[in-house]
Length: 348
Ligand SMILES: [Zn+2]
Image 1 (tube, protein in one colour):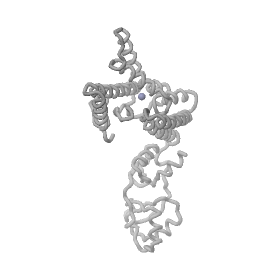
Image 2 (cartoon, protein in one colour):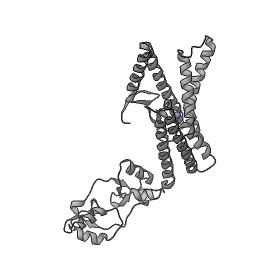
Image 3 (cartoon, protein in one colour):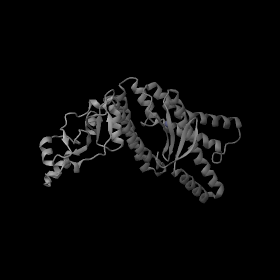
């Protein structure tokens, strides 16, 4: 992930921190120093570091559990709004998803319980302001509880989705979880505006709101395109045009096609590139009828094998902001074109 610094590897999982973390530490240190001298500064930095460490431990709770289900964890990323364990996928079995989601907050509650026990055994009078153990307990209670709020895709929301998915189709459960998550996100924004003490809430709300949309789309994609391959969506009945064809001839051959683009071949029948229908029409309007297609050929599109899963093609085109790919047969010959719109149509 961009703007992150690798901060070691634990249990074989790299931990990355966002570059703003040193800045956050300095800011809290300076603020503490101005308030009560250097001792206060050290105290403030110590508390912020403690929060970071507890968030990382929380993420390890998720990561180690998800790995037990045979799912690889790429890394743990610490962002200013919270931590994120990036696994290659989310367990599809609702029971496993619930256990993975609960494992993070559970780590915090175990730490809190440990602190509580030590404080209890110690039996010395409790100085709430200056007692590190008490702060550690409070930080972990807040982290554990906050993450259990059922705002999908936060942990509580994942647990909710898992519970619903045991009783209804996975996509429906995801939709409900998404809607509930978005309502809570809106509440977070309102709370943040009413009380500036909770200034982080609107930021987290943005993450929840758009995170929920992205998660729902991924599930929908899997369901609608699942089992389908690139060849199932390929547009094969395309005009055969060579690069030396004039725009005028090309427009006659293409007719009033609704194709986004059409392929252009060299004299040996090899694919050279594509010409966008819109560009052809624009050029004709400008009277460039005698131009050859060659000048309008574009090559910036991927070649994708026909047996590639359709969902993978969709992800690839989307993440690279591409509209079109050429699909090739087993023998690498040209099969046809696929556009992201053809795929997106199936997702409505
Ligand atoms: Zn979590």
